[in-house]
Each structure stands twice: as structure tokens, then as C-alpha cells.
Amino acid sequence: MEEHDIICTGCPKGCQVTIKTEGDKITDIYGYECPTGKEYAINEFKNPTRILPTTVKVEGGEFPLVPVKTAAPIPKSDLIKAMNFIAEKTVKAPIEIGDILIENILNTGVDVVATRNIKKESEV
Amino acid sequence: MTKHKMVVVGAGPAGLAAALEASKNGIDDIIILERDKYLGGILPQCIHNGFGLEYFGEELTGPEYADRFMRDIDQAGIEVLTETMVLNINQDKLITALNKTKGVLKIKAETIILAMGCRERTREKIQIPGDRPAGILSAGTAQRYTNIEGFIPGKEVMILGSGDIGLIMARRMKLEGADVKAVLEIMPFSSGLVRNKVQCLDDFDIPLKLQHTITRIEGKKRLKRVEISKVDKDFNPIKGTQKWINCDTLLLSVGLIPENELSKAMNLKLHPATGGVYVNENRETELKGVYACGNVLHVHDLVDWVSEEAEIAGRSAAEYLNKNQEKRDLPIKITPNKNLTYTVPQKIEYKFKDKKFIKIYLRVEKPMENVKIVFSHNEKSMLSYDKKIVMPGEMVTVNLPVALIKNNMEEIKLSIVEKVGEKNGRT
Image (tube, rainbow over all chains, first blue to last red; front, side, top):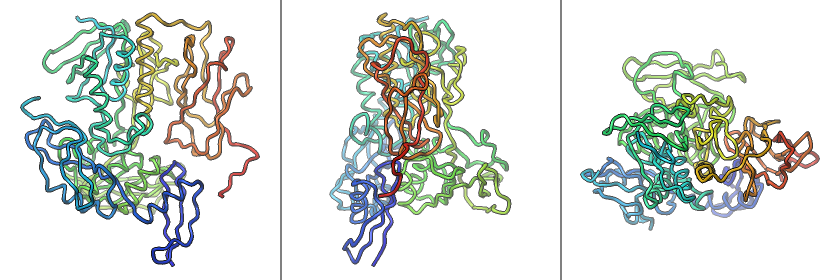
């Protein structure tokens, strides 16, 4: 049997929810004070995911970087791998908000999209 | 000298929302003055998600949140002057500004919106002894270098202060490959959002050391190491708990100060708890026709509330210009009482017209659970709201229905009290 402590991020209270498991099976869950806490803890145990916000290098733009995010949450365990992958990438200005800069990153089925308009350096 | 109906100082979230709302209310001669090269204030460097849940009902990053307002400002045809630093404003609403290409500008305004935002406290402000090497910077400066200008400020990082900016930068530096050694917090609790503590520190096993501070800095050219100490309940370092930690970078996230130099030049008095000017329900200052909103008025934790507050200021400034306002016979003071550090606004001065509520923003002194927020007049309760939990780090907003406000009232007090006779246990 294993025990996992998860802090719910649903509200400022930050309840510590404990999940007891045998193999992949949840045998007990307690410590939450509302349904959000229970649901959060179960999701966080089974498949923790995060949106990854970072930057990508820009060539010929008004700024040297464009901020980006994964268009949907990706597995938490992929965050550092995704950062290393994104670090190798350079894109050309101009860029518009929502432009897909990397398709299907690490085969997660999720695209990396721009979150800021970047004009060409020559047009500023 | 040029003349404008409305001048907005600052194109951050407050300035943009105020200008836009004034434009929607029929004001066609607005100019925004911004000292940076781009609009959006701090938002473009806040590349993380978590903005807009309250205002737009969806989760956006900082640049995306700013872009929505920038687009509308553009469509509304509102004039914006970037790289323009306002140097002075006098009591006749004459503005002196410096523009990169146009030089000194004199602008006479009929109304002014102060939306200068806030700045970060520095090492000097908190007086950490030791050497003065490179590598010590405010968390916001590091954020700008990392996210906009393309420089990583260091490789081995210590962070002092566990407010949201400190937590966000801990994750950001870690993701960019730095070794983030720890986040120190002098208080016994983190002032940041729970979500940020989990997703920025716990996710990456970055330790949060509560009741710790930095007591010495060492390094000749570049920062070499810092001495950390545990503190007692009065925040004094405890002898014998010192430890040296090697690092080349120290990020400070130790509080924000509303940037009110221009307000002071206009002889506006500052509120000791907010660090901003005194305002009525319209966010109008003691100088008629001059408004303040956003972080220059009081430091907000969510940009969504900044936008909302700025809209109140923009709308009220439009009413002022359209001469569509009437004063009450008596102003009503709004006074923070038990367990509150401040309220915004501090008074109600105008007749309500079609308003149904007066929105009051407040901040509590200490974390409390199962409480009531009580409005009272002459020691009698007028109305109360139940709250499961309140924290100093999270601003509370409550609505005061105008139907409850009588003409003879001179003061309304707000308190936070624990609910009596109700269970406060875990279920």
C-alpha cells in the first residue's frame, strides 16, 4: 500500500488530500473539504498535467523572443523534455498570437502557440 | 501646449481599461502617455497562464490578456504616445512630459487618470548587509530579462520572498535550466497563491523555507554566496542558525510600492495602508476630475480586479466630462474596522443615479476561516457576507447595495468577524 499527499489548488485553503493506493487502485481518499478537492486529487494522482508557458527565439523581430504556451495541458513529467525541445527552435518574425510554432510537441497531440504579436524589426 | 479632454498616465492594464471605458462612454479626445516602448505594462513579461479567469471567464497568459485591450484601444482609435515619460502634473491639470522624438510636451487636460502602477522594493529598502556585487536583482527585472530581452540572469539562484512573483520566477529560472536553491520567506506562511506554491515549487522540488531571511551577502564582482538565518516571531535573525549558501544570483520579491511621485507633485495625500491616494467611490482623488486606479491606488493580486477598477474610473471620468454627476448632501466615510487593513474607496461622495451597488475592495490583516464580512452603521449591522476563508494575500471584494444607504449616514464601518456558534472543524 502507498500513500500520496496532494495539495488541492482549488481555493486559497489548500487542503492536503491523502490518497491511499494499491497498485493503480485507489483504496482510500481523505482530507478534502469539498467535491473540488476530491476530484482534483484524483486527477492529480492519475494524470497530472500542466500548461507550459515559455519563450521561443525569434529571428528578425522587434523582440528577440516570442512568448508561447502549450495550447492544452501536457503531462507534468514531460515539462523539462518539452523545454529542451523548445530551446532548439527558432522562428521568423512576423508572428501573430495563436500561430502554431511547434506542432504536436513530443507526440502529446498538443501544439505550442504564440501568445504575443511580434512585428518584423524593419517595420517597427 | 496641446489640450485634451482626457489624459491617461500609463498604458498598463489600468490605463488601457480606463481609456477604453471612457471611450465607450462617449469621450472622443483621449491620449494615453506610456514611458515604455510597448503597451500592456507588466503583462507582456508575465508570460505564464492564470490571468483573466474572473474578467474574461477563461485562462490567458499575460501577453494575451494585454492584447485583448490593445486591440480594442486600436479599434477605438485612442491616441497613444509611447516612450513618453510624464515628469510633472500640477493642480491645474497641466502635464509636463518628455517624449523620445518630440522632446518636452505640455498638455492641458480636463480630466486625468493616474495609472502609473507600482514598482518593486529593492535590497536597499530592506537593508541586507554585505558586499554589493552584480547578480542581485528584483524578481520583476529578472523576469523582463528572461522573458522579453532574452538574457538568463544566472545559473545558481536564491529567491527572497514567496509572493507570487517570487514563486513564478523560481519555476521560470528552473525551466530555463538554472539550479534554484530555495525560496526564503520571512513570514510563517507564503503570501502567494496556493496554486503557485504547488505548481512553481512543489512540482520542481524547490524548497520553501518559511521564517528565514538573508543576513549577509558576499562576492566581489559577482555574487558568490549568501548567509541565511532563521528568524523569530519578531523577524529578528536567531543567532546560531546561520548557513552559507553558494549562488551567483539573488532575486528579490519583497513587496511592491505604488508609484505616486506624480500624485505627490499634485499635493495629493497618500494613505498609510494602501500607499496610494485617497479616493471616493468613483476612484476620484481629492482633486476633482483626477482619478486613480490599478496598482498606483493599491497593489492588486489579480489583474482582473485592476481592469474592473479602471473601468469605474474611466466611466466616472466620462460622467465628469459630460457633467452628469451630482454630489450627496453629506459624504459617507467608509472605515475599516476589526481585522481589516484598508478599504478602497475610503468615502462615498456622489448620488447613485442608476447604480445598484458600490463595490468595496478590502484587505484583511491575517488569515481567518469561517468569517462574516459585516457592514455596520452606528454599531448596527446593515448587511453581512459569509466567507469560508480570507487571506492577506488575496483581496476581497464585496458589494454594498445602495438601497441600504440612507441620506443621514456619515460613516459605514466594515469588519471581519469569526462566525460564532458554528462548527469550525474538518469534515
